[in-house]
Image (cartoon, rainbow, N blue to C red):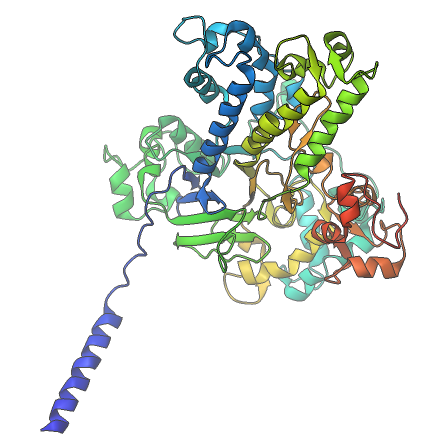
Length: 591
C-alpha cells in the first residue's frame, strides 16, 4: 500500500513537471512605470523594435534628481537677488539675472557668446504687478531650462565613404576566402604598422587606398547643380509613445532609402511584423501602412527595458541593468553594452561620479579674475574695473548683492558658496543621450567615436566581432553578417563619443559661464592631454615622453596604451590640489 502511494505521488510529481515544461513560457513581466523614461524606436532588421531607457543618478530617476537641484538653485538665486529681503524682486533686482540665467541653461559653450537674450521684465512678471515672486521665477526657468535628460544626434563627417570599407575587409582577408576569421581580425592592429603612412598611429581611408594605389582616391562627385544628397534617415528615433504622423514620415523615408515600400506605404514583408501585429496597425485593411498608421508603432509595449545607473549604485548592480529584453543585451564591467539586434546598438557610459575638486577649481578661477580686476588693490571691484575684465564684466551686476555699485571680496565668496555651487549642481544632476549616425560596414563597427579614423584601441576590438555577429556559426564573419551600427552614449552631464571621463566635472569659460568641455577641450591630467598628440584618448609608447619603465608602470593592464583611467590613477594628490597644473608621472618628461 505504501509503495503504491509513493508511486502515485511520484507519478503526480512527474506529471506536474512535464506539464510545466510543456507549457509555453510566459513573457517577462513589464516593469512598473518610471518617471522620465525615454523611448527609442529602432528600425531595420527583422522588425522595428521599441526600447525603453530609464536613467537614474545615485539610485533616483534623473528627473527627480534634476528637479531637486533646480529648486535648490532657484531658491538661493532668488534670495541673492532679493537685496532688500522683502520676498519679491523689483525690476532693478530682477534685471541682474540675464547673464546668469544663460549660464544655467546648459548651452553649448561654443554658442554661448553668440546668443543674447535681452532682459524683458514682463517675461518674468507674469501677472504684471510690477514685482517677481519665486513662483514666477520658477515659471520663467521652466520655459528655458534644459531637460533632465537631453538627447542629441551626432552627424559624422563624411571622412570615410563606402569605397574604403571593402578595402579594409580585403586587407584583413589574407586567405581571400571572402570571410574574416578570428585570427584575421586579431591581426587588425598590424595594419597600423603596415599602412600608417603619416605615422599618426591612426588608420584612415586614405592609408588603405594608398596601399593599392599610390594616387589618392578622388572625392565623390557631387550631383548636378551642386546640391548635396538628402541626409540619410536615422534608424534610431526618439519617440513619445503616442501616435505621430510626422514620425511615420521618417519611418517611410528610412525604408524608402533601402529600396522598400512604394507610394502606398510599407507592406508586412518590408517591416517584418507578424500577421497579428500588422493587422493591428493596418486600420484601413489595404495591406500597406501609410505615414499615419506607421506613426502608431510606438504605442506597442517595449521590447526591451534598460536602466542606466549613473553615479553611486547598489552593490552588484551593473551600469546597464536589463529589466526586460527580447534580444541579448550583454554588458561589461567598464560600462559598455551591446543590443544585439539589426541594426546593432553599441552602448557606452561611465559611472559619472562627481569630481570633488571641480568646485574648488571653478572658485579659484573667480578669485583670480577678482584679483586681476582689483587693480588698485583695495579689496573691491567697481564697475569701471569690472568693465575692463572680460570674465567679471557680464557678472558684475549679479555679484553686486547690495546694489552699491561695487563688489566686495566677501560678496564674491558668498556668491560662490551660496549660488554658484547650487548652479553647478543643476548642470551635474542631469544626463544626456548622444546617438551617432549610422555606421557603415566593418569600419562603422570599429569606429566607435565616429571620427573617421581607426585608433589602435578600436582595431583591437575587431577580434571580438565574430562571437557577436557570426550568425551561421562557422567561426567567421561574412560581409552579409555585418549589420548597420549606432553608437549610443549615456552620461551624467554632457555626453560625447570620445573617451568618457571617470568623473563628471565642470569648468568655467572666459566669460565666467559654467561649461562642460568635450574631449577635444581637454579631459584628464595636463601631462596626459599634451602627450596624446593624435587626440585618440590614449597615450602610446611612441607618444610618451618618458622612459619605457615609467610607461610600463602607468600601463597597468599591459595593453601598450595609457588610458584616461590609468592617467587619472597616476595623477598625484599634489597635482590635483594644483588643479590643471599637473606635474605628470614620476619618470616622465614634462611636455
